[in-house]
Length: 228
Ligand code: SF4
Ligand code: SF4
Image (cartoon, rainbow, N blue to C red; front, side, top):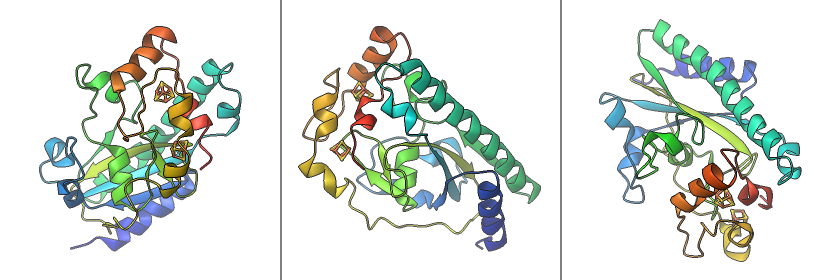
C-alpha cells in the first residue's frame, strides 16, 4: 500500500533542507522500450520506488566558462555534496519507518558513470530517466535532463527504496524537448564533437575531452549555451 505520510514527510524534509526538486518514479517505467540502460531492480530486486532529488546549479558557474572551469567543476561538486547530505537524511528517515534505502551517485560525480564502467561509461541506472519518469523534465540534445524549473542547470541524485511511495508515471512529456529541433546550439559548441544531430552522444569523446584534454575538470559548454 502507498505510504502517503512518508511521501509527504520526505518532501517536507527535502525542501526544508533546501532541495529544489523532489519527485518519485515508478520502477516499472524502466521497462519501457525507450529505455536501454541498467534498471533499478538490478541493484535492489524488491525496489518499489525511485526518489529523485535535485538542486539548481548557480548560473554564474556557467557564465564564467570556459575560463572558470575549475570554479565550474567545484560548484558542481558542491551540488553533489549538498545532495549527498540531503539524501543521507532522507535515506535515514525511510529506514526509521522500517524500509530500506540506498543512494545513487550523481551522474558525473566520482562514483557516477564516468567511473562506474570505464568500458561502456554506463551508469548503474539512469537518474535522468528516473527524473523523466517522475515528470521532472525531459531530455535535451545535449543528453542532459532539461528540468522544468532549471533547464539543464541542475544536479541530481536518486534514492532506491522498497517503500511504496506516491510514484508518478508521468511520461506525457516528449522524450526530447520540443525546443531542441530548432536550436542545436549544444551540438555546434561541443569542442569534442561528441554530440550529433541524430540525437546520439559519443560518451567516450566527451570523457576523453574532460579527462585528458581538461585534466579532469568538467566542460559544461553544452549546458552554458542551452537557452532552456
Ligand atoms: S542547446 Fe538547444 S538543442 Fe541543445 S539541449 Fe539546449 S535547447 Fe536542446
Ligand atoms: S560536456 Fe563538453 S565535451 Fe561533453 S558533450 Fe557537452 S560540450 Fe561536448
